[in-house]
Image 1 (cartoon, rainbow, N blue to C red):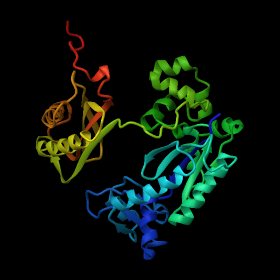
Image 2: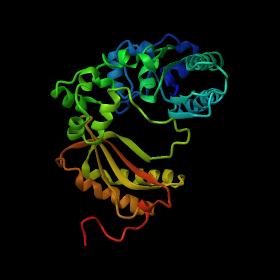
Image 3: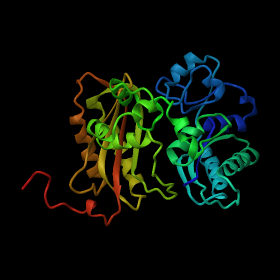
Image 4: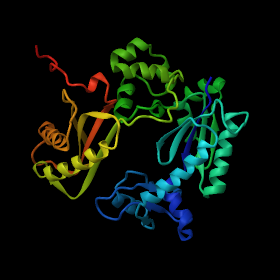
Length: 357
């Protein structure tokens, strides 16, 4: 039985700003650039009371909270603080898997601090973050990663929640099915059409039915409904994708995207060259003026070997967008994903394209 802790910093970017600028403490802080095209990077809990949330357009945040204090993001500073948090985590275990600048999984089945329980380890970490960094973190403690992540959100901010192995069913079954990882709006609607509103309802459906309906993710749903998650904490998780994107000052038509696609492809290629692994799949990401996100991708027989080749594929994906010529776009991004080791057969030149004899 593993002991997993999920540490989640509370309103991280906004909390760093409030810590470093005393006049911001107690104020509704929104970390975002001002302007019609900006989105919220983070919001303090004072701003969240007005309904302000991350990824919300900044203009909407300003309408919801007219007294909000807008602070431009300082990612160099946030990364520096994130490294300090990481140092604290590593004092307790080497098995630390960062998910982003502000959250990480820890496997403390065996810990370096000599504390007898995962609950004590989580509390010690939160105490150290508070005392040494003057920030707060919430923690979830559970037998696996997916339960620990749900638990860390249970008593935010500055809280801790523990799910003991014998308590998994009591905790899990009443939850709305939307609390399960991967169940967003679309999947939630599909499950609702099957009469599934809670995890308890989901558990009543057999694995074969879920697999027929949802493929491999159906098996995952079957396991999650039973509190099963075999995922290990991976401290050196390999890169799976790199990308770059840009938001336009004004919405543009599809035929005006080429210069920005070229620029984003150059940035993506520069990031990809820093990796020891090789990316195979080129992805074009677009966001329409009404915030609809769509992606188009292509996996060539041989991975892109140059920036020019990556750019050519990204530009060709424009033809697959399939929306009307008058649709305008507010954002474009280029990504490279499906990374594999260089000696993996999947990245070696293929003799035949699929379906060609």
